[in-house]
Figure (cartoon, rainbow, N blue to C red):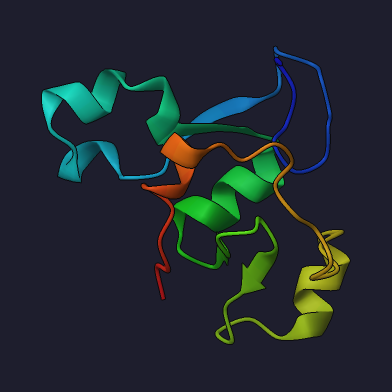
Length: 98
């Protein structure tokens, strides 16, 4: 839907396509699989790529303990966020990264 999977932010010139299974660990099919990607705003993309956030199967965000809650809050991340419209094929790829 051309918006951040978490926030709904919709400026395509700012959003980043983030791989669920990292590019370096993906096979050719996974690299091109649209279900191996999440469109994220820069903050959520950076946290996801650095394994500082992940998502439960129902879409609720999971925060790594390696950053204090106050630091997440300074970035605008409350811990109540969730991925909207996670489909079954996304769920097969989402896994805990920390």
